Length: 250
Image (cartoon, rainbow, N blue to C red; front, side):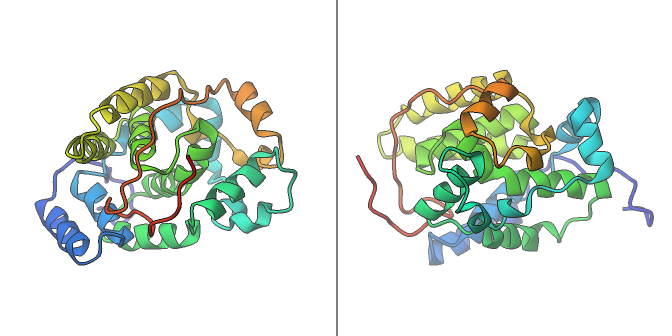
């Protein structure tokens, strides 16, 4: 990267070394989240040129990018939304994180530990940080669960939104792992997820600060966002980065 940090730093390249490192971590501890992060980068997760271009071409996205408008503080600290009315986006996000045992700050920090190995222009770093930290917010808005099939669906949705080929390979890997356990239907969930992402508004460009305290149904309606169609869930405790096994309601 040039000294001013202006030369493009986004690219797509498979990195076998990162994939081997991820596999070794997963062998030692299937629940270690860093293996999922390394797999993403190993599959070429720096492929952010299309996402940056879409931000620049989007009226609100351009403003968010130029002004470095941050995500709301509660995205990484969901407990800040616990006291909001139950029907609000913020409360539903907090509930999602609590019920699934998620710590967005920990996930962000562990992901950044890998990302900092790569140079990035200011625009690239901002866009990457934004979509990384928005992942569980997008779960809540789109309706995909954190089971293996739901993760495959939201990753396929994200690929359609960002066109990052790392996400393309991740959802294909997820669906393949499910297929090995007899769940070939997850490919259908991915197909619907990708189509859903193509139809959805570009959520990376949204300034969420004005929406977290609003009813989630109103937010979806105003953005023109549909909820994912129902899909057969599939819990897979040994999935890369999966949380510890928990009781799942029927």
